[in-house]
Length: 296
Image 1 (cartoon, rainbow, N blue to C red):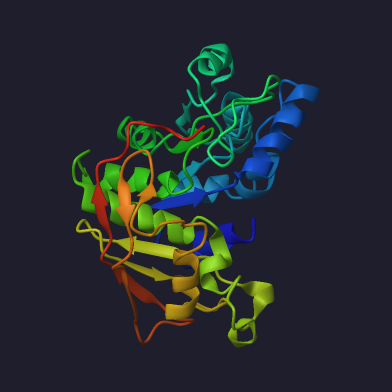
Image 2 (cartoon, one colour; image 1 turned 180 degrees about the vertical axis):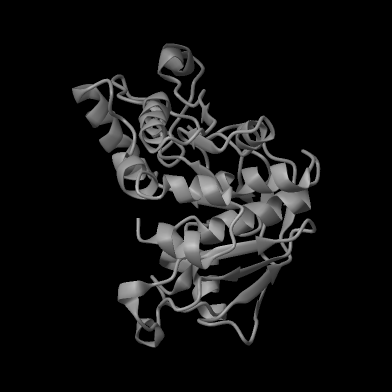
């Protein structure tokens, strides 16, 4: 929860987003829910990231989006409601559900679904099965007035694209804009990775103990500035951001997401002078229609 005071008090935020999930995390949360039906979400989000700061989040009007719901987003929302009640703040908490496909597993087995990597059929025993949802349910929840949006499994970049769709009214067929918003999400989805956390030239990154977390300032045209709060460690440069751009990307001309197929092959990253710790302007993402398939 180091990022919360940094960003809440050091940045001028409209939205605060938290990305908690990976494939390994989902398996761990599945095991946790098997032990107790009240578990299956990431408890640190509630106890460490939200509880100590929820009054100031409410006072500042910052809206929160997170995939911390894991495999039990309703339980996560219920825990947040208790935190809000104890803090005597009135918050609208929305839940994005529908990613859990366990009730459909037999139908999916019969449909000939195969593993993306190996091409093998689905295993006989399945502990969890979740589809990677897109950004539209998040933007819809924000349209309806949600202060906090808790999701289960969605694409990591969706928690950033969702509020951008809500803020700017981007349409489903404005694929270049959707690709730009997805790029913003892709760059900051791993937190301090883009501010020097995995930089090859690690020795050039100052003050790791207080590394700054990223802030995106996006225009309605899709261009955005990536910076970090003042008086924090880390580094934002062409190199740190370019390394995150290609992180887990696969084909840069065909990055498949539920809302858009992205082409990041001509993205431009330009360093901006005068920012404490560095900043870059990013533009040039292109988009085309998404495929008819979802990743599960």
